[in-house]
Length: 200
Ligand code: B4P
Image (cartoon, rainbow, N blue to C red):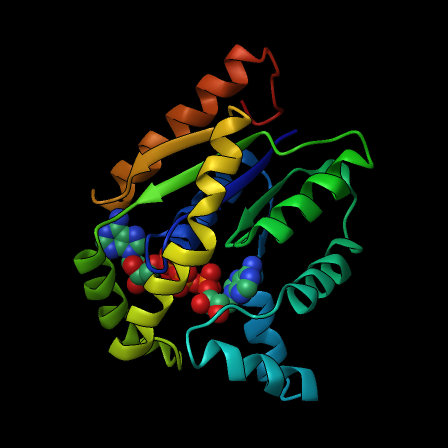
């Protein structure tokens, strides 16, 4: 059983790679971006509030994200094994996740951090904007998201590096190659820890 975090700037391929990791390692995929967009699509009062943040490219406040996450996790046994995609994005969220997992004698196993240049991020997200219909995939908002990533999320690199949990992956390569490197990192971790997941 594994608990992974996939971390990186907007457009680095977190969602893309999470889908593949989920399939290969039989994990439950939790994307806070998807959860928040689902709430927006329901057009609830909360959804409208969330849209106010996402449309500007800024982070949704921790209390809202944590509440959404906790509600979703209630549907699963924590023993399932998760890939957290786009969560945590702040130190408060990281500490909350540690607390929650520790309370059931579990922990984050590995944090996969995907590095991609800013120009490439812009190019990918502008490319996606043609069919994503996402309000935050426009140039001005993309730059804001990158800036927010650098100021609010990047400090998590140190938080997880200090715990010896960080794996850095060059995300500039094609999707299959990036996935190959991620799989290698996970397989090596699993082997070194002598934990044999059912999927192997
Ligand atoms: P997210 O939904 O997490 O989305 P993202 O960071 O924009 O994208 P991701 O990295 O998953 O990119 P993808 O694989 O799709 O966040 C959206 C917003 O929600 C945030 O800005 C924030 O406001 C809010 N939010 C979410 N979580 C939050 C939290 N925890 N706290 C507070 N606020 C939160 O890839 C992008 C494109 O690149 C795709 O078109 C893909 O096909 C392409 N691509 C991927 N890999 C590629 C590769 N190797 N080569 C070429 N193209 C590639």
